[in-house]
Amino acid sequence: MRFDFVTPIDRRHSWPSQKWHRYADDILPLWVADMDFLSPPEVIEALRARVDHGVFGYGQVPDSLRQTMCAWSAEHYGWDIAPEWQLWLPGVVPALHLASLAFTEPGDGVLTLTPIYPPFLKVARRTGRLSQTASLGEPLSAGEPWRLDLEALEAAITPETRLLLWCHPHNPTGRVWQEDELAGLAALVERHDLVIVSDELHCDLLLDAGARHRPLAALFPSLAKRVVTLWAPSKTFNLAGLTCACAVIEDPDLRRRFAARCRGLQPDANVLGLVAAEAAYAHGDPWRRALLEVLSEHRERLVAQVARWPGVAMTSPESTYLAWLDLRQAGLGDTPQQALLERAKVALSDGAAFGWPGFARLNFGTTAVQLDEALRRLDGVLGH
Ligand SMILES: Cc1ncc(COP(=O)(O)O)c(C=O)c1O
Image (cartoon, rainbow, N blue to C red; front, side, top):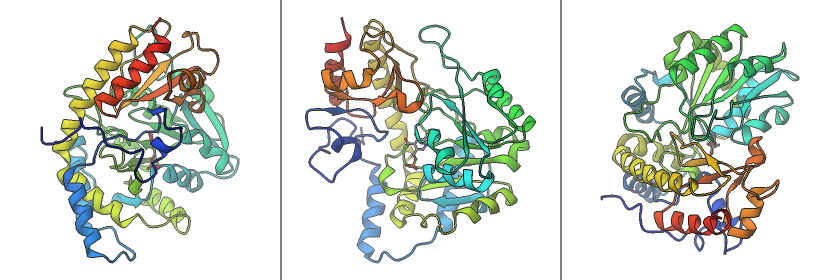
């Protein structure tokens, strides 16, 4: 294979990484969502060339990047977007907060569905808004998908609710929402006159053959005046440290309101992040396809292993490199993530931070050698 997803890269003794330096050296880290793989060679070459230029003054989003994003959207999602719909920013999480400031007033309700990537749960409080949550429906039986429970979602809506933070595909369950589910969601959002932020950060990592991402905004053009779509190359091409993301907003008024809120509250996008984003979207697709094969294999390894652990349930993720483990019956007490950290020496993400104690999220975006070692260690605790 042209790309090496096999050789482990030593991240422990290089520039500090959140993933590898949060815990002691004897812990294998399968928590925060970045992968232990080199980014696509074309991205590394483009960065090298930009660094060789040697001048790092304020940058500007190049037209070529906007055009590249338009081409990627048309080719991969069947959605024709215009260059001016794109607002490039240093991150998706800042964009969630800025959306709250832009589209709600103090005391308004910001709603999200749990379990969910933890920063979603902090947006309301951090921006002086009312935090509102509803739960996804648990799998009806082991291995079945997590469900969008529209009744529960609607019941959580109050007259204060203004904004819905939505994750598509979904972190942590890996669910790829289907068109009928999204249609129900779109109708609900219109019925209650909400703005919706569709965080689609994981959308280029659909693991099942033939699966195709359909942006919420592309499926339902009638939502245009109320939807902000968030994309980034950070998960797909393993570029999180280069802080670069894109908000796509078709409606000029919504875009103006969002852009006005960004001014002064966040820096321009990082020049190296923009360079990397353009190289990734222009040339990185063969690498991404190869990555998907590797991640699918890792998913199968994990599914087979989890099936052997009594009291542990997991629905096979349809996307990304994250798996959501139900450890409530695993006999590890109320804080299973902590128990596995101490006893198995493997760091997972604690489900409590996602709004669901008793669960843990496992990142399988690592080499097979490292994944197997982590599974071996976990097996020592869970496999009896
Ligand atoms: C759904 C989701 N949104 C946002 C982020 C973080 O994005 P950023 O690093 O651009 O702030 C993550 C990272 O894991 C994520 O999973």
